[in-house]
Amino acid sequence: MSERRDINRGFKQLRVWNDAIELYILTCSHLMDFPFELKKVSSNCIDACHSISRNIAEGHSRKSLKEYLNFCNLALASSGEYHSCFSSFRLAGQISETAYEKMDILHYKTENELIQLIKSLQVRQKDGTWENEFK
Image (cartoon, rainbow, N blue to C red; front, side):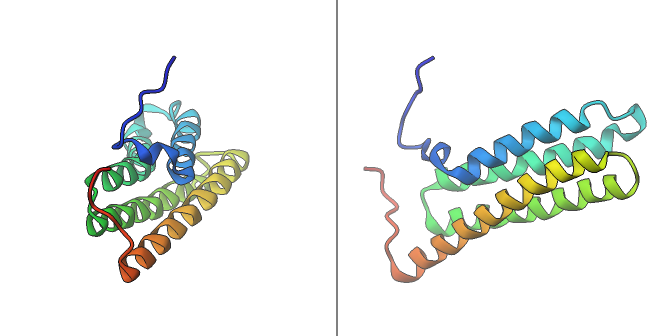
């Protein structure tokens, strides 16, 4: 399969976006078999996780640094929501310690990458090195 490339898909090169996708896949693998009574909460958790990569992509695609930062901050908020979800599942005995550890390790890595992206964008905002035009 050939990779389609254009200037609006640069987010796919970001390690944080790729790790957020990997986190979504991992989360789905652990939560898809939740019992019917818990489908809504598991679905909300999956959505919060998926929202991380979606907000990174949408912000990157806006081409405005102010909007990009806003969407990265929304992704960070989704990351917090996601952490609350899977932590509560662990405390309620709804996921195993092993599943929790796998999710927590990758979540921690992804969240810190996102924080670093936000910091780097804030530096570019401060020093004026962001270009809003397509090249």
